Image (cartoon, rainbow, N blue to C red; front, side, top):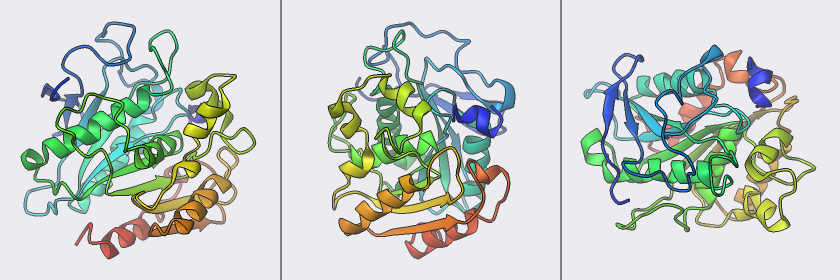
Length: 303
């Protein structure tokens, strides 16, 4: 989201946990030593919540964990990726707020604080967010016993540009952009995309997201690589997609074209298009979430 202005403006991972301001949630730093693909050293002041619950710079990627009570936990986990046009992270609203809704259904939720593409901070800014998302999936799978998670019920949830990153994780899992000595599966078991950016094709993409991730003059090869509708195969995980037809920030055809490619590749997919709601509709009405939970129930992801 330039979207912010539209809404309101290794080896095995090291366990470094600390209590956060969000109640019983825990924050886990994703890397123990040097951060892959980084040009700069970690600075403690980076990654703090700013105005409107948004984060504008991340040097130390992390996940914040929200757990349901043990007597209601069902073993399903989601990695939640907030949006923000690859320029900010809408952390509180799309991340923490959504995590709390999943917890009510017995789902363990991990909110991703990922690096925002920046040429001065990264060797290759186009892959930095994907590295962090893959590292998070890897952590969840490798530590599923500790969190009471079924390793075969780990999904990804993405909003807006976070939906682009989520769909990238769901379509680029055969190549590891991180150290993965155990060859842990980086494939999510399901994907939930909410008003997502999908393509990087100029005529349909969200311009701010494309410019931030790929630069002003990306090669055709790079555009194709991160146009995720072109990366769908029969191995792509099952999907739940939702968007508003009157979205003036991210054209609904992003979702429709992705659905079409999933359907053609015989990937089980459900799509809900609301006639009105514009971009960021989760901030204006809560009814969107019940059909999603219905889909999860039908797919044995919640009881």
